[in-house]
Length: 185
Picture 1: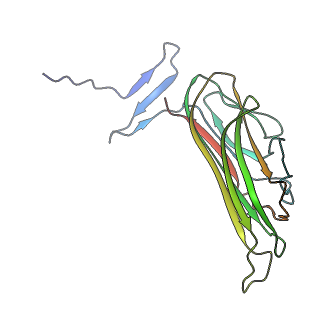
Picture 2: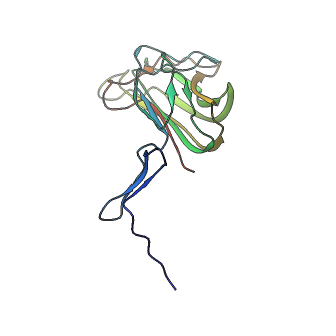
Picture 3: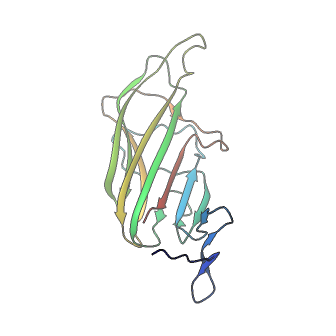
């Protein structure tokens, strides 16, 4: 035996729409928690050796479902408990000739504790365009259970044996450098 429920909107008793199903079956959840930070106001920033200071993004592209972002664009506060997907993408560019870092750490922290880390080696490339024209992308992502009011930060740092002189690259519009996340369930 099968049953069919025909409904277009699911709402809370206060009349807030929680979910809409369109005529072809797509589901829309306008209040589902998600956020995206992008860019870097100081593009001359080179991540310090053994850094522990939170990275400052340039702007909030969106923060829905109760996410809040600090006025320095460095801290995001989680609205509700649940499982979240988080990812940061950092574009490094303009390295000095013959510079390298053995370990560029791209990290995500929850309440000042590291929850995800990715180490990458970055080496300047000299080609037909000359030195200082190579770009390197570092990533870090995780799927994790978070509690309401947890806060999230990105931290970039390089190894103590690094002579990397590259900077953060972002033109402010294309999202070369970003941090985003959303509630999965």
